[in-house]
Image (tube, rainbow, N blue to C red; front, side, top):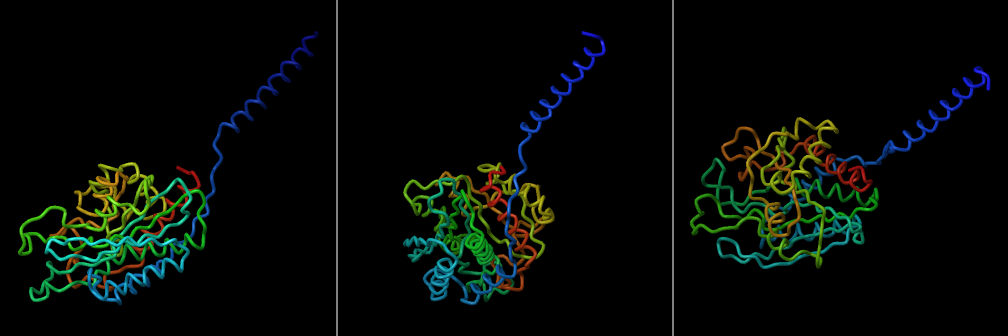
Length: 335
């Protein structure tokens, strides 16, 4: 073989090797997954909150509580959920027996991979932090503390009905009797343990389906006020740090870093505590924790200022869109 032909042969071999190498590289690179994520409608979430507040204080054993429960069930039925109602007689720190209802909306009931979303739907039976001492024993409206989380979840549920999600089951659990816990100092009764979050304690011990399992859970509590700050809460980090980082990273990507703060905050006794400890489902808490506050929560917390005036649509949008992004990416296998 002449030198010229040998050179041509070598060049051909090199070209073939390069072609195979390029094809191999292309195969080794994961394909980019395109996910069609619906747009969270903050106006709808606001209206859902407004409707709850219109019933009055949703304290267990009250007419407003009964009326709101009936509306919530109708609403979930109307947006395509299979609705399960968990009735329970729960004893408050006062000794009163509460006729509680945990309301569960199930989407994609046959899916094995499941995520649970939660909020409490009752409101506080007293306003112990109100500026007016004469009004501290009166129940509050709880526009943010209770209704905001439910409003966001209802709008998420509406999207799940309109924009079907494949390969992932969603269970929306509205816990009752969360906010009837014993106030600091005992409130005239002997100090008792675990007086808060009675509905989630009951659900965690008696889940709505036998052998119910979920990969993880997201709790929403006080997610509607202006300039809210959601730091990484200590209980959430202890039991579900991976879920926290997943949600907070999605919030950052969506442009909501001013709301979702990567700083850590002290733990709170909230529904997620019992879901983590009793149900053994890793659940995080998206909860407003201002940097400076006497109570550790918003200035309106457990006062009569917790009405529709504190609700901000931009905050609702930040929380609702972040959770939708997580759900639809989870279903698509992005994580």
